[in-house]
Image 1 (cartoon, chains in turn green, orange):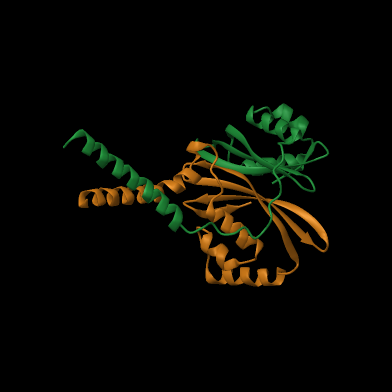
Image 2: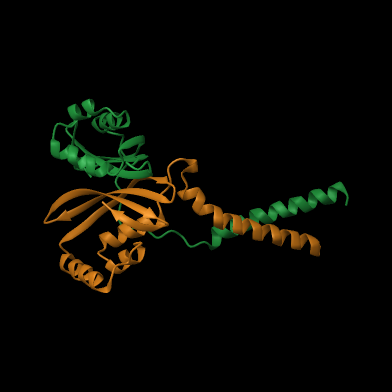
Length: 133
Length: 132
């Protein structure tokens, strides 16, 4: 087989791959329409970021200072449960409506050492965290 | 000519299969950062806002017994019209092994007042196992 013919075969094969990929885009069903509007994305609220930093650094003293309300701390405990050791805490998005909502994903380990992932939202109003979900 | 067509066809089949298998990995795998919104999580949230217990049961890992699903239907019919969903916003998510977490913010209107709630859905094998 000559070099030109080999190159042509490879070229046709690659063109076929592209054609197949394009066919997938054409024939795959479109994503369902979003029947509700979406709120505009917002920056991470500073109060939420401070709380997230304290959680990520396992800094109970600072966390207790930032969230004075014991019910909120209990809610945060429930939101993280069963994670006892946070290994990674990532801000994933925020919206601003009546109040700011700042979402986080925590990865860590439970008491048995199993890897666990949890998601929670901090509600921020007036520069303070006022709710955890 | 026949060889060229056969080569093109084999390439096209391979391209289609790779695109079909690769698309969900690209959108839902954390290899490229945070996963994008899962179709199942989105459908669950729409079912939740539209009070559709059948759709919700189909997307849960444990579908539940017939009596509990009937109870959910009754509850949803009693609630229908009382609250009006205004917006549904995907905030983001993450992945750990076979588990995915997807977080949403929802605005409701009840009695002329607007409320905001958040939902964190945990999915295992593309089925909802936890709603918080």
